[in-house]
Amino acid sequence: MAASSPNLSRSAVLAVALTLAALRLPAAQTPPVNAIADIVLDAGSSQIDYAANRLSFTDVTISQGELRIHADKAVANGVGLRFDDSRWEFSGNVVLQMGRGSLSASETTVRFAGNRIASAQARGTPAQFEQQVAALPKPVRGHAARIDYDIAAQTVRLSQDAWLFDGRNEINSPTLIYNIRDQIARSETRQGSSDRVQITIRPETPVAPDPTVKP
Image (cartoon, rainbow, N blue to C red; front, side):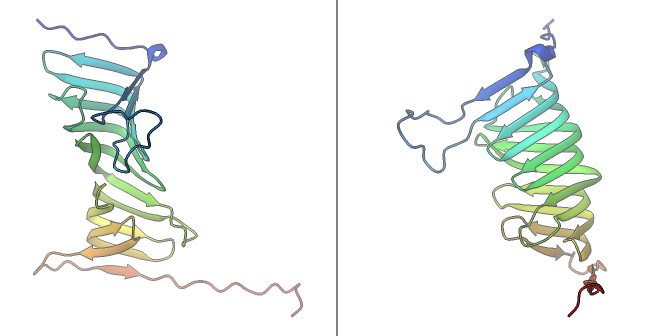
């Protein structure tokens, strides 16, 4: 019977820096623009089930460039510690940080392709999205039962009772797609359905003049 390796203690926190580029260039050379960034995995404990080919981690963080995923637990089945084509299941207080934005959910499936974080599917009651936009005083926020994040397209798709708020106006729709790069939101309804989009516009409240200040 195959044995599983024991858990690692916090004093021996797993910190695996995986060099995923095919070749590492000498330090004197400038790496190409499309060079693949290292993936770093850090966890409080790990367990390897050789019989089931299953990896599990607790208090785990996986980061690559500006992307960072943290969760209470992560599990990968049948792939080993590889990121060329694999799916990882994160659960418990999952937070995915993406530059000036973030996703939070109770469960998230992350797909790795070509040794890069390719996409994430966040699920919760609800899953939540937030992005700080320079032109707005408050961050753009949204929530839905499911949020799909496409890293290459830089879009988040909020589906199943989607809601988006830009600090003043609210949008409700069965499905909303928000482009992180262009900061554009659009609704999506099924053709022939009775789905509707509802936008609540909140007028700005004028600031009352200070009576102590003379004109």
